[in-house]
Amino acid sequence: MVSIDDIRRVAELLRSEFGRVMAVLPPDARATADAARFLNLNQQLCYRVHAGVRHRGDPATVVGVFPGVEGLRHFIAAASAREFDRELLAGATAAVDQFEALIRKGGGSQRRLVAIVESLIEPPTSTPAAMLKVRRAMFESYAALRGCRADAFTSVQILNWDPQAADRLVKIAAIAKIGVVRDAHSMPLVSRHRLNPEEVRTGAAVTDDAWSNTRIFTRFSSNPAPPVVARRNGQSVLVIFDPDRTRREPIDVVSGPFTAVGIAHPRASETGVLNTSFAVSTPSRWLVADFFVHRSLATLIPTAGVYSIGTEGIMAGRLGSRWYDLLPGTVDIKLLGRGLGQAECEQYPRQSELAGALFEVGGWSPDEFIGYRCQVEYPIGLAQYVVSFEDSSEDPSMTGSGDQ
Image (cartoon, rainbow, N blue to C red; front, side, top):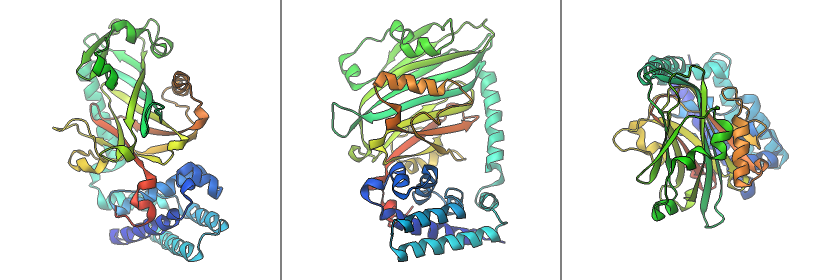
């Protein structure tokens, strides 16, 4: 029987050896897409190696983050073709050999090894299947309480450089509540959006018409669209949608575009990260959140977690800083690649079209952006889902010398 200590030892060896390999990539090939081009590899493979090197948490869990043995050997072969140092690659090869031996000892497949890890380090109630059951029960209870439910809560956010300020970014976003069904006693649908600093400073008026006549709302929401009430709330605006309760067919409510400017790049912020977060206020079967970053920002790598808002409100720092509010379970990020080719979404067939409309608002080409997706079945209502972007070019783990 494989032990948790054996798994942790091999996992740390994988992180260390592949961290050393990644550290000698040229500076212009440190981002996932650039590394894939430099090594002539599949982008998803490079993303998983990158994610494994940067993995945080119990070291044993990295065995499910790295690609399998064949993928790791393919990565080493590509590095060898680029004439990486033989001794460096010998260390990575030895680590993969031990990983392969561990998999054989653990039942013959990476999936079985991951299942062993979950059984050894997580209580039975925290396995993915058990947590899905808990979240589904929460969804049903929350939907009964609020008197409404949605097939999906989706969002699209696009990050690009702010042309007006160095080391600052601009964001364009939209939020969609898809397939909403309401009971006679249901609460209205509410979205909260932070105002730009300039809007706060000038006290710009917030009007119902301004929020009900946007090109995104009128193009993507159901027809007839629900009444809209918009109210300033400090540095934010509350947008309240109150569809007809007697309407039985499901409706879509899509709000946006929202634009935020002057966002600090992680290297220029006090926390060293750029966090974006959202709470699923409408009970929803699915959460699908897409993020697109300009290719010149490709060193910004996202990780995610779900947190209780607790007594401290919105999470502002690194994900590990609020460990006491971290809820059980993992929140995975999927690499979509460049452009909108992989942005189709079963839960919302118009997700890719919505992203394209936001790119039109910014006047940007989707092919210049790299996409990521956070997707959760039965997201926890009113918990804080946080996606944190960290600059991998300044991450010590990318040099093979950092502790995680």
